[in-house]
Image (tube, rainbow over all chains, first blue to last red; front, side):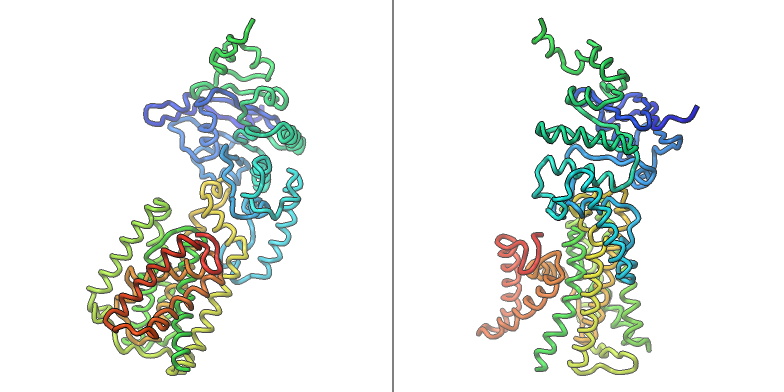
Length: 260
Length: 287
């Protein structure tokens, strides 16, 4: 049996008096869209930080394609093939959409001062090629027309799509998306879900933090239910949604007020 | 004519120093108030070699540039741990420390009395004694500096530095080595400051700590703000405007005793007015 695609085992992380992650373990399948759900404060973003090297867990480990990645730098983890987005987007607002994508591309000639200074022609050539690739990536997420627009002038929905374009630029295979659908209009939401499906068909594996249960039902192959930093349940969207105990945790009894 | 040439030489020296400050403060967002200290180290090193050894100007300038590269990396390192306002305080401390060393290390720097009699630069065996010759040298140096700055900013390196200024964490998430980019920028800024310091020492033939103190660092920031942060044009324009001011003030009838204070007053007012009403400077972007 081959090693699981991403295997998180026994992660603990304590912030002062708060046990943010408590023996958190799960695996995700290659090529699947896995949704990470759970109430506020369940540790969803914290586990993202632990997987991507932004946070060093107190104990436990993360393996990606059979290779241990916990303890590596964010840079090394991106190179290994995992990239993440942020709930608060963290785009570069004062540069263009295309430049945001280009910052995400790896191994660029002229990204060090000496090559930029002494090989200006090769740098310019390499850049011209990169810009073409960058436009293709923007086209994939439907932002080609906005390529030269400054990010602060893009709509919120466009900015959310751009965060995904920036992830695609890294060529990572496993994309961790932190609430990509929150705050989107119905039209933008449909476009986003279609995009996630296209990425899946193109061979990407997605781990998505999502609150909207309808979105989860439509896109998820697997659902991970996180509560108080611990994996409570893993299963198909139908199975997770049907579990009354999980609904109780998730909605905090609000459902009962509207029940029969 | 001679007066105009010396204005040109001095302005070009400050253009190089302005590029150094603009790179750190404007582009990367490392708010350093100690660039005059690095400038000073460049000046003292070149003065030392020309006064005490038979080393000629260009090798001395190279040594000064290398020392300032190392020095600027060291003094910028705290910015990797403390950011924003906290780094300003750290950098302030570095500037005070440097002034204390310049003033008290009489064996090396001549202390508060300064170092008089620094010989003019010699390039390939030619002594550059006249202002016209010096202007040619500083024009070439400033020209090279501007070309270098332009090449760096249009390359992926420049984009990476701008992105780091906006969101360091997001740059790390994109798989980039933020540390290496910041150290590279600090090294380049150090080289620019070191070269301009060397030119300054040989042009004036006299240096003392007052050229490299906190006031000088603030003047430098004022040049960047007034000219315009983050752009090449702003870095060029700023020094020319700010260095013309003392000359304009000298046209006004004020006693020489308060001329220096009046100059500081005008610089301070300019900085405040620009920050309030035109933060993008004359030809730059909002800092």
